[in-house]
Amino acid sequence: MNCYRYLEKRGLSNDNAIRFVRRGKRFGRIPFPRHKLSTWTFLFGATFLICFLVFSNLNKIPFHESPLILQQAHPDLWESETGRPPPPPPPPPPRSKRGRQHFPCEIGFAKSVDYLVEPSDLTNFTQFSLKYIDRDQKSSSNNVFDLRFGGHQTLEERQQSFYAKNQTLHCGFVKGPPGYASIGFEINEKDKAYMNTCKIVVSSCIFGNSDFLRRPTSKQISGYSKDNVCFVMFVDEQTLSKLSMEGNVPDDGGKIGLWRLVVIRNLPYKDMRRTGKVPKLLSHRLFPSARYSIWLDSKMRLHIDPMLILERFLWRTKSEYAISNHYDRHCVWEEVLQNKRLNKYNHTAIDEQFNFYQSDGLTKFDPSDPNKLLPSYVPEGSFIVRAHTPMSNLFSCLWFNEVDRFTSRDQLSFAYTYLKLKRMNPDKPFNFNMFKDCERRTLAKLFRHRITVLPS
Image 1 (cartoon, rainbow, N blue to C red):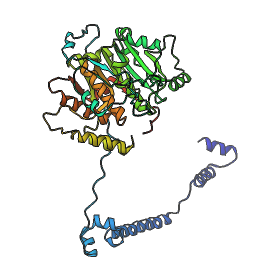
Image 2: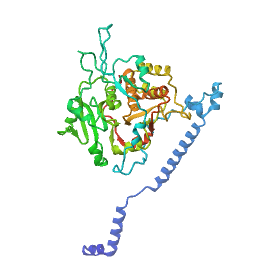
Image 3: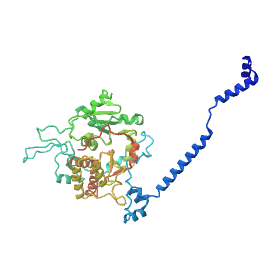
Image 4: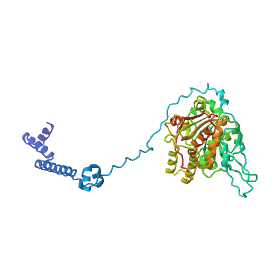
């Protein structure tokens, strides 16, 4: 009504006003050509019908298809056209293991370290005395002497070293004749003095700046372990420099967090992976007063108290040595193929080692064998728990000697070393605990290495 009053003020009558407003409403509409709607509907329907007929007829004309489609979709037509039966379909691609995920599992740890008691029957394990060759003797028939950190062990000496008896054997740290240079793996006297006081050790290493420094989860480590367990990280000078650049500077006591950094100078091998086997396998030589040691790879961060680990994997099971099985592979044959496929090491060197082991009795792993000595012949060696007993120390020396003599891939030599030790000492038990890989993943958080060590 307001618009009508406005028009009356302008001198327009009611009839004229109504006619004016209605005309304005018509002008505001957008006209749509109704006769064209039917035309567009007809064209759209015709196009759809033509496309439907064309594509439905193509399915009935196999002669325009590729030979592969014709073989698979129309085997009868293929045979009638070619005069021969279609070839069998290709096998499905192998299932990739990269997509397989592995998870930690629950472990029944003791509730607290406060009431843990070291078992008194530790001396019930096989007892004998081990001494270690300290210096190589120069052969009078050869004026050229090649220094080797593992020494020059003959095949006869190697064979005799597998007997669990009082003996003196090669086990790294073998000096050259008088007047020759150092064999390497040099530790300053202050660090040696500290290491000689350790009774329980957690150790790891970073050589060649191959990893980040991953500190144990402090809130998961008890006050007792912080006071009584040595946490030692072995590094070379290159790694120490890189850590300092990243802000990881040791305090006055040489510590970063719980780790006491021990700097190794004059590395004994060019292969950083082989150098890493020294602290990994020879903890009883680096810590001569220690009763127990735990090794974890630098790609792992410990988040379980070490005393709980000793109780669960050694004391409760009455074991001397504990290591987990591999997460995917259980046979050395599989491990050999995987190392070659990924170019982890020189293929010729792998073949020489593998052929030698087969000639000395190594057989394939049979999971159905009720008398198998291990649940797997391939370990996941990134986490090792051990008591420093004679059998445990002997096994560690033998395993290291294989790594020194052959390839640095310790998973290739593990089963051979263990089975040969058991075979040559049938009346002397070696209390071995191979636990599940999912349990290993519960003990520490896994990360990726900083860099990939190139194969030798």
